Length: 253
Image (cartoon, rainbow, N blue to C red; front, side, top):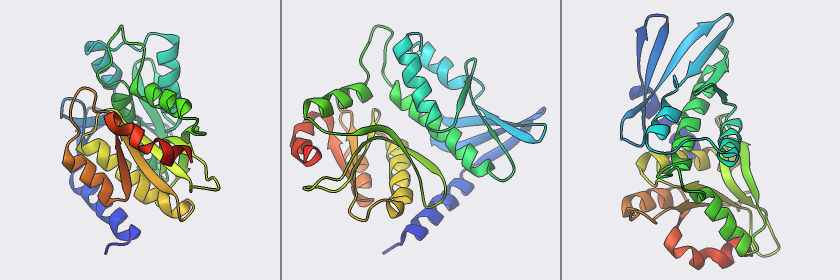
């Protein structure tokens, strides 16, 4: 059976093999193996600025959401976006998502920007201009209704020294261990893989009996068995939204 180090190493090998670089004037375009909502590879851009390096999505993420009918134009949506970006150390520069890096922390910062892009894409997935409720908020309301105590938007530094954001952390009680939840609005392969890596990288620095859950949105489409099986293979329990009441007692304990 593979160890945590083996799993992390295989992830790094996959990431290296599937990442492409090319120079465009004074920028370097980095094509990552992660897919956006349209199943296109996520691209980010790199340029040296003094003693630092700037990494940016060149405004693509928010522009794409706007073209899909999701404008980040209300105070609540802006606050939700800011909270998500802050969890990864990413800044919004006009419409671009950006992060600055040094030679020493470049891998970490590149990883943080890509994870922030994935998180923003997933957070606002299938949102429309007249929709006031997002899946993340619906999960929070359900936890409140179930009298579940939790900390939202918790960040943990993993075994690899990468920072990982989890949506809800339910603290240990007399009846149950710590429970860590990742909300996945668009349950596809990439989002499942991102959640799996975050948990594998984090669980060694959490209490030994901590449990991981992924809350999967199936309101508009069926969640594939492949996604659920992939999560289970990394000891993450999938909670399909339509069957969430089956897990109420486990989270409220």
